[in-house]
Amino acid sequence: MKSIKKLLAMLMVVTLISSLFAIPTFAASSVITESHFSTVLNRNMNYNVYLPPSYSTDTTKKYPVMYLLHGMGGAYSNWKDMGMQSIVDRAGGKEMVIIMPDGLNDSFYVDTYKAGIKWDTYFEQEFIPYVEAKFRIDTANGKNRAIAGLSMGGFGAAYHGFKYPDKFSSAYSMSGALGVTGNLISVVNKNKYPAFAMECGTEDSLVWQMNVNFHNQLQQAGVPHEYITRPGSHSVEFWNACLPKAVVFASKYFVDVSTGPKKGDANKDGNVDALDFAALKTALLRQSFSEIDITAADMNNDNSIDALDLALLKAELLK
Image (tube, rainbow, N blue to C red):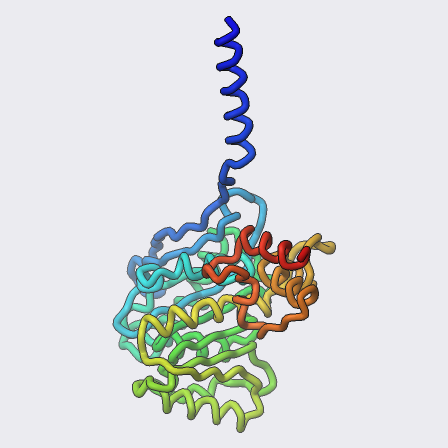
């Protein structure tokens, strides 16, 4: 009898220790594939949707949205295939829904480039209303809607952002093919425009001069924008490095649709996220970081912002 009691006691201790040191489980993001029939294009259109970690657990929450466009010769699945899910998970921006539509190979996301394809009309008048009603999205009258893309998609992001400034709070062009079709500067209203950033690799002979030209045109028009150049070519590696910056850039211009202050909102942007962690580190450790570079919060340099970083920050402060 004593041996049984002793065994039961040992099992209880083991169970208690296991519960104390159990690895917590967290909600995960997901990327799903959907389709719908477009009356504008008279065809079925596929698209991918990135849903943030809390989407499946907080069923009343609504999210800002970013439209992410692929390049020429590609399809809606390209960004998923490039690994966007894990990149966005680690980016440190606000939680958002990211929608990846199909640009039909080479539409350039306009009505006039590809015969019979009115992609601009489809996107603005049919797709956006449809998809934003289907998912829990609150655009706050356009203030919580961003657009970004690579190459042809970089052109599409700039085109739609500047043509419809009331609909998009920001646009981000990655290696944008900004001079292939039409005169992009002609859709820019120098009195009303979204926040705009353009990034291009210095070894990108395909679109480098187009980006230089558009940057100069925006400067001459007096339109403020971020112009980012760094070593790199027209490549997946370059675009994957652009994506987290595009997420953080969009996050800067999103507004909070809830009311009242939030605990932990250190930078008072209406959201509790990695930006607050970095702001806390800045204040307490007297270290600074670029607003677009959230890696300041990655204390252990493992390319992930999580509880381990918080523990290291605590250890640093209690030295």
